[in-house]
Length: 124
Image (tube, rainbow, N blue to C red; front, side, top):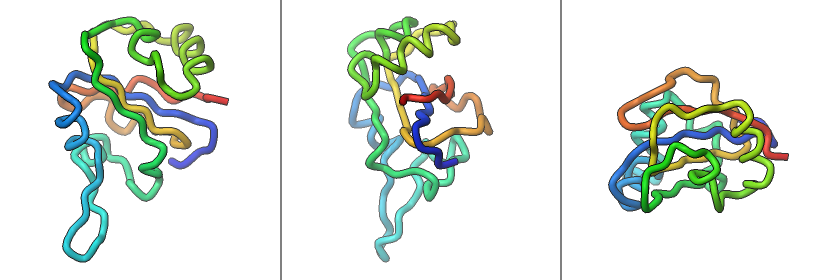
C-alpha cells in the first residue's frame, strides 16, 4: 500500500544485475500498458500502488548476513540501518537487495523463490 515515509525491503540471491532488472522492472505491451514484473507477481504487489522511480535494487559482489553490509549505500541508510539492525536478525546470507520507498508491504507473501520479504520501516 502506498504510504509516504515508509520503505519495504526484500533480500535475495540472484546472479547479476541484468537478471535482477529482468525480475523487478516493469515492461510494456504493444498498447503501451505496463505489465507487472515477476517480482510484483511473486509478492502479490499491485504495481499501481508503487512508483518505479522509488525502487532501488542492487546485486552485491559477495553474500552477507549483515544488514549494514547489505544496505550500505542505499538512500536514507543512516536512518534505515540502525532501525533494521535493532529489530531484525538475518538467518541467511544474501547478495541482492530490493527497496521500495513510499510503500508499506502487507506481508501477503513472505518468501518466493530466492527472495524474502524482510520488513517495512520508516525512513524519515
